[in-house]
Structure formats: structure tokens, C-alpha cells
Image (cartoon, rainbow over all chains, first blue to last red):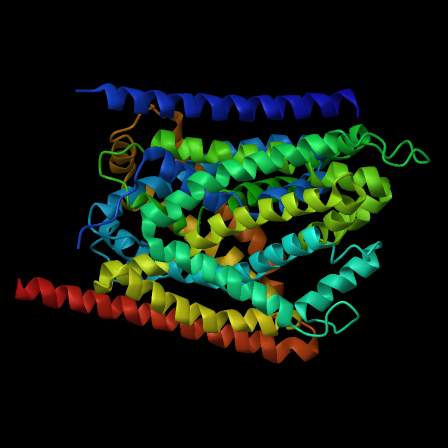
Length: 38
Length: 517
């Protein structure tokens, strides 16, 4: 695989993993806040 | 009757992600990427995700929750609520029930092949097939397209179809919380675990044939990911990327509208929509992009993989993958994992396709879930037989064209215009942010109002010229299949007319009720 291939693979994985992790973090954090609310 | 609700926020996110994650994530995406610029394909792909995919996700989640607040779970009622001065818009919403039914008719049958192949993988039934030709003959025998040494008729396929159909109905009968939510909440993690197991296994293949050292996994990844910059200058690449984003996210079908209608009016839609889309992308780009093409390359090389990819997604899934998997260490188990993964992806999608019709019967005719599921089950069971018995006569292609392509693009275009222009961008933006856990960048006001509809009209126009007109005119239909294709069209017109009549009847009933009150 050429360098360009590694860059596209790495960048795509990074963007998608970051997006999934960020959105799930926000979802789970909101859930915790809702549960701890009086 | 009290409306059903989702049991948890994660439940609806997993249900929408489950609806979006289907066979296309694992079979269609890698082929599209490999044929349209490799790594460079990801540029138009992400552009389309930002300009079409995410906006449509948010639009459908918002319309769905808004319509659910008025007691509607399907597009006819929702469109009527958005534009109540127009008497005809609810009939346009019929597409949001019709399209999913049409896809369900053939999808559930294809899904049953996965169950069958999962069983064959464990029992070693297809192990005697060691070439592309023999594996193709095995598939054709199973489908009943040809009678050969592997299968003498449709019996085996029919048993697996009955099992699959029963599984779908059982989940639907159990309802939103105890059926769909439960299956998706447990099914998707299993799907991802199986996907990761397969990925690790494929990555550890190295060079399966030492006599052909160039056929290895790293070169296989290169085959898929090395950028071919010239492809970016072709309109075909941009259309392919937009089409892939569009079809992968389950937008334009009416399914997300129905799922979101079971939210409460204060539930977030912005973050939930984004999260469901992210899970879909994870399954598509990371798992889908790492299994089938690299594995095929390692065993068949560049020329072989190009030829295989040209044969289409079904060929790749049911002919190439079984061949590849049986040559791997623990081939039986890997084959089983592959087909179970696809079966889970299939079930979580097919139940979502069934839900709009069931919800329509429940909402507009006050039927119980049991009655609505029984009516849906009986009708679709009969209709599925067209796909089962006339598979080789072009019926499934015809159903896929109308339900899986034409209706999707048209429905998405109209709902976007309805949301941004008729309901109004000011109302739309406010409604989208009710209960929202994130603030969507303001640029999306402009994107949703101008860019997304323009992009969709462009896709619709190009697609009509390139594919639509030849299919309308049956240019590619073999003469011996003409009557089957015409018969399918008559069946579809009758189905649409019946659904439109039901909408007319439901509204008359509603008016009579209101007058009596």
C-alpha cells in the first residue's frame, strides 16, 4: 500500500472513531446527568 | 390507546443505527470505494455525509418526533401536520409506507439466504465448491434458478425463508420496547464483536499463498485505499459517493420518521441522529472497508478482485466470501460469523421496514399491535412469493428499483423541501433544537434550506437520466421477462392504490370522529 492509501485509511478511521466516541460520550454523559437530577 | 415509547435513549439510537446498518455497509460500500477512486472516494463520501446524510438524518428525526406529538407515526399524517392546508400532501406520504413494504418483500427473502448460508458454513454444505463457478452454481441451485447437484428445488430456501419471516414477525409482535429495541440493543454489539473478530482474522492472513507474494493483505488494503486522484474529476464518482451515503443511512424511506415518532416531544434529536449516523459509518468504513475486499485480494489478486467486484455485491457476499472464508483457518467458524453478522444486520433493517405499515394500522385504525402485525404479516407473506418464485425473471430487480431507489430519492427530496420551505426554516430550526443536547452549527440552516435540496435534485436528475429512463422503458429487460416485470408493476400500482385508499378512509374516519366529538 502506498503512503496515500495509509493516509486516507488512517484519516477516515480517525474521523469516524472520533465522531462515534464524541457522540457516545455526550449521550452517556447526558444520561448520567438525567439520572442524578432530583 | 397510549402511544408506545422507547425504553431508553440508547435504545432508539441502536434501533436507528440497526436500521441503517444493512448488507450495503459490508457489501456495497467496499465495491463502490474500490471502483470509484479508492481512498480518494472518501473525499466526496465525507462531503456527501456533511451536506446530505446528516441534514437528512436531522430532518427525519425532527419530522418524526413532531408528527408523533400529533399521534402520527407515518408520513401521511406527518406531512399533513407540516402542511395542513394542502389536502393532497398526505397521499404523497403514502410513499413512506409503500417504499418500506416493497423493500421488505425481497429483503426478507435475501436475509433468509444469510441464515441458510450460516447453517451451511457450520455444516460444511458448500465445502465441495472450490471455484467461483461451482459456488455460483450452489447459489443458483439454492435460489431455485437452476436445478443441479447441490439443490433440486426451492425447498431448502423456502424453509429458511419461513424461519426468517417468523423471526421478523415475532420481534414486531413484541413491540417497540420489548421487540425492536431489545433486538437492536443486543444485536448490534454482537454484530460489532463479530465484525472485529473477522477484521482481526483477515488482517492476520498475511500472504496466504507464498507462491504469489504480491497477493497479501497489505496490498489488499492498498487496492481499496490507494487514492486515484483522477476519479475526483468524474461526476460519476461524486454521484456514487452521494448515492452510497444516501442509501446507507436509511434516509428517504420513512423508517426514521416512524422510529422518531415514539420519542417524547422534549427528547433530543440532534445528538441522537448524529450518534446513529456515526455508528453506521463505523460499521461501513471501518468494518466494511476491512473485510471483504482485502480478503478477496489476498486470495484472488488484483485482476481477480476487479472481476469479482464487477459481478456485484451479491456475488461478493454469497460466492466470493464463502470461498475465501473456507480457505482461512477456522473456516467453518469464520463463515458462520460472516453470515450471522450479515443476518443480524438484515434483521435489524427488515424489522424497521415493517414498522411504518404496522404503526399506520395501529394509529389510524386503532388496531392492536397483534391485529396490525397479523394483517401486515399475512399480506407481505403473500407478496414475498413474487420475489421467491420469480427471482430469476427480474422481479427482485424491479422491486429494488421502485422501492429501494426511485421512492427513496423522490421521498427525500420532497420531505426536505416540505421541511425547509413549507414548514419554514425558522420553525424547522426551532423544532430541531427542542430538547437538544448539542447546538448544530448555524451554517446548517443554509445547508438544509439550499444545499441539501439542490444536491438531492441533482442526484434525482442525474439518476433519472442515467438509470431511471432505461428502467421505465424496460430497455434492459430480456423479452422473456417482460410479462413478469409488467406483472410486478401492476402489483405495485395495486399496492400503492390500496394504501392511498386506506389513507383516504382513515382521514374520513378521523373527520367523522371529530364531528361527533
